[in-house]
Image 1 (tube, rainbow, N blue to C red):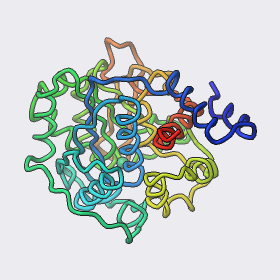
Image 2: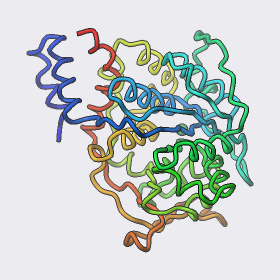
Image 3: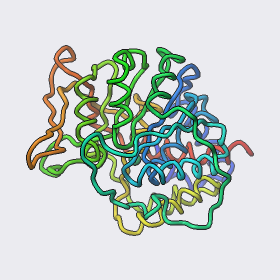
Image 4: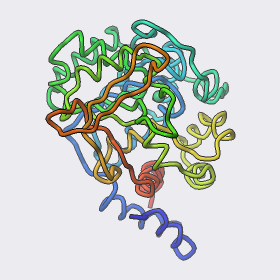
Length: 349
Ligand SMILES: [Ca+2]
């Protein structure tokens, strides 16, 4: 499918109102299914890419009856956990969703910490110092307890997506051996499928190698989907111009904030390819976005100079511990982003 290129071809002949109606019809028929029963928790490390994924989930809930976002849990990576907590409050304030509970998570890896990369600025959100917000108090329980309790409360209906270091998820799995079995699904945005262009450790996996190891060791293929960054980079590299001139021109408060959050990172990349929003798109509508997944025996190397490198042995479901996303579609992903971030404009037509 090439949904967005169809839109691009048609745009000279349609009025603005026609555009949005056309896109709206397209979206309702193709892009985002309703899934009212499911609940969603986003475990994230507070970067601009996390912000975009969180906005997507909240917009999907509001405009497409998507899963209800019932909590955000904080981890570390793009920034430290303290800053991730601060950024969570900023993101929820922009989205006008200060009702979403925040559970604070681990600030350190289980064993070995690494320096953050500050790819999105020192504060993780573009070092924009002008936005102000009223503090949102954190829940009294730490993230690991919050995750376990929510998995009990919404047993069978809870989807968790992990967008940062995996410490909270590993701790929840080891604290409560039935945690994973109560989830509807766990999506893990981390790791690479090792190959010619991906010989280094992936950032999220590397930030807590032992936690990745634990999560992989305790995984089941019908409960856990790994979304390797290598596959997103390979199949969903989007031109910087599209991100800035098309997606970035959507005139909403959320998109203008998102543009500011990415103001440090956008000028230094030619191709725009972020793991977190790509992973959220898969959670929102896997059938639309995913072209191929493979069952795999997936793990991570802990010792030696290969530390943090993922291993995958593609195999049958019976022999596998996870599903690994292998191929994703680019044009439907772009269309979904456009539809979600422009949804509030269409409500006025
Ligand atoms: Ca992240």
